[in-house]
Image 1: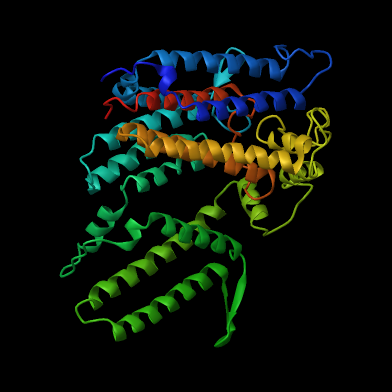
Image 2 (image 1 turned 90 degrees about the vertical axis):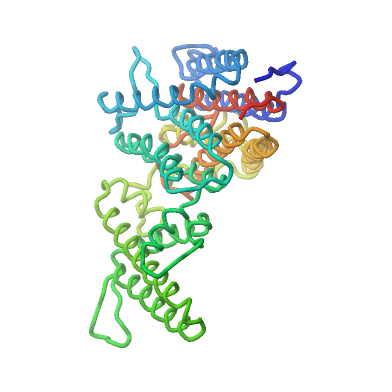
Length: 465
């Protein structure tokens, strides 16, 4: 690989600037929300903002190291980085639980969260694997290998359990979709296994995103109608629960579809259409029963969070206390906010909003800067994500492009879900706000992601497959 003449010449300054803007407002918010008059110095190690400053320093130091290392190292040793984080994810399962989850490896009085770094290593290995594929190559083997790279850390994260990080790992599926690694080969093999049928492509595998949204809609409807009871208008004495009602509707739609296509399709296409409709009905019905069964076997607090977000029940002073208090804090900021260090509802001292310096750090920011400041913050995050997508599309290297898309999706998931938690649009699942939330693993891992991307992008004019 040919080295670039000057890192400063090729570095993406808009992305770096947005990174430092978020870091600055992040530490300012941590300082504000956990301020102690006894230790007003921002470098006071007895307070959380002092520790956060240490982690910021470590992040910037690691960023400098990343810039000094040859970019080809990250391609060459992607599998090694991935293996190391997998080992750490296994080790963490044997650590004592903290807040009900085995997610941290303790080092003295501090600890690291391997799942945060697993996102980086997974991004690197996925980028390396896709970059080594033959152009447009898509077989069952290639798709399963790509999914396997995502599945291994996901299953270990689920075992901790860490629902928030597990959801973030699903963002990699959009990267596969962008690179053309859909589930078409698997679906085609299944369909073509029937004698006399020959499909060349499938709508489901090639249109992953709309199918995903259909599944999510079906997921929400299934849970919403989980305990409901319906009377059949043509059999008024027969009552069925919500899950069977959904399956009945799917069956009715399938029958109507079969009748419609039998009338308007050719004899040659009828077997294929009939098979697709039947399989579609079976898959959707199986999904309904799977969602219902899984939901009924969730832990009580997990079921409560989902039910509260879907409006299935209300408990503002009980299970929904965190989300309810977070929305109250955000709303109390009004249009222009109360001013810096004047957050009363969401400060650590008031203890009105739990975890206001970690998962709910958006609350004090919104309370201090109001709706206007919150919109500006969201725009900065959107600018960063869009800038990364712009960086991805200008690459000649497949490896850098895929890695950039991974980073963009991880950041988008984090900031969208975290802010959604704070304003009542998403369940409380414990996911940090990038560059804002207090915590060493989060700040360091997100900083490494950005610095790696900046380093790789600075070599975009080089031959880096």
